[in-house]
Length: 88
Image 1 (cartoon, rainbow, N blue to C red):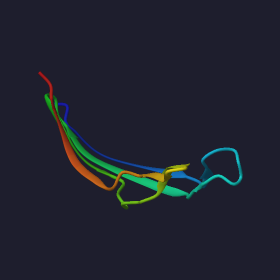
Image 2 (cartoon, rainbow, N blue to C red):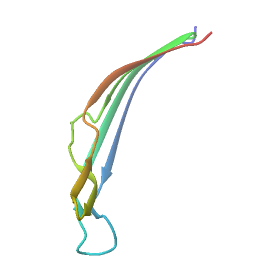
Image 3 (tube, one colour):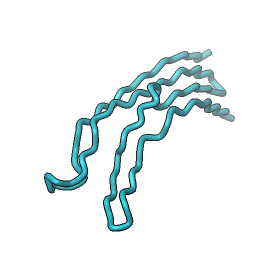
């Protein structure tokens, strides 16, 4: 039997930045993004429970200033789910 349980965590830190090289352009704030995975891997199947954006960070990752107004894209909110694979 080739059973395996695992836990995986990752953290990504992004410092402050600007939308382009012009110092007057929109500034994007720094943020940290953490994800977790808990899984079981058997010979014929595997299951993983995941939590993306554990802290539910809500930071702008893109800003588009134009004559019609500013459009802001932000991080995806906390997402919890499960994936199951069956091998045959």
